Amino acid sequence: MNSKGILGIILLAGGVALLVFGLNASHSVADQMSNTFTGKFTQDTMWYIIGGIALGAFGLLSLVMGVRGKSA
Image 1 (cartoon, rainbow, N blue to C red):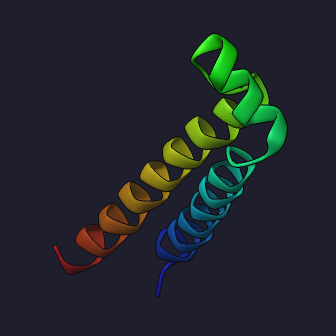
Image 2 (cartoon, rainbow, N blue to C red):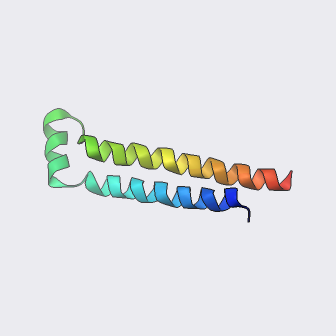
């Protein structure tokens, strides 16, 4: 496996970890109170979720492009 594929796997795993961490944080008491009164989660939780999605998408794209570049 080339370096792009390894980097893609690492970024994808990091993105999934951030996403899971953000989703778990959204169930905390502070986030539930924030969601109840403001209709949205705390800023930290949103950054974890957005960062996890972005990092996971970038890792997946890097992984796919690494595999595609090797076979073509």
